[in-house]
Image (cartoon, rainbow, N blue to C red):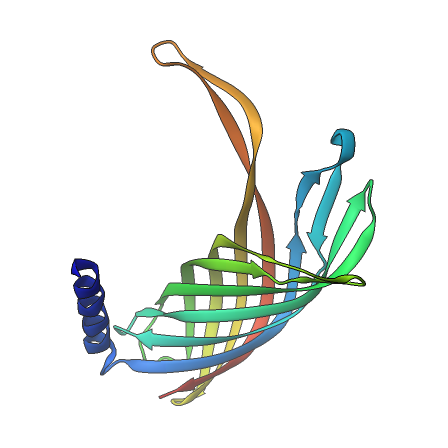
Length: 209
C-alpha cells in the first residue's frame, strides 16, 4: 500500500513537472560497433562470442524540464549476428535491444540554433532469441548504462537534426579474479566483471512540440 502511494506520488509529480515542458520526439539511424565476452568452453578451451557490427536505429522521447535539463526514454535496436570463435565457430542471427531512461544536459540557450549535449542513462540491454536451424533459443536481458555526447542543430524552432556518439556497456558476468587480503579482515575471493560494449554513431531528426 505504501509502495503504491509512493509510486502514485512520483507519477503525479513527474506529470506536473512535465505538463508545461517542451517535448522532443526523435528518430535515429546509424552504425553500432559491438564487442562481446569470453565464455570459456570445453576443458577450459576458450570460446568468445561477439555481436557483429551492424546497422542500428532508435527512437527517443525527451522532456525539457528546464532550459538545459532534459529527461526521457530511449529505445534502440540492432539486427546483427552473434558470432562464436575459438573451439566453436558459428554465426547466428540475433537482435539486440536497448531500453534506457536518461537525463541529458543541453548547453546553450533553449532557442539556440546549435546545442551540444551530454547524456547518461540507466536501463537494460536485451539480447533476443537465437534463430538456429533447430529452433529458437531464448535470449537474455541484463542491466546496462548508456552514455552519449551529441549535437543538436535547429534550422527551425520545431524541427532539428541530431548527431550522436553513444556507448552502452552491458554487464554479462563476473569471472574469478583471485584473492584480496587485508591484515585485519582476512582474505576474500574477488571477481573481474565482464561487459559487452556497444558503440553507436548515429544521426537523426528531432520534432519539437
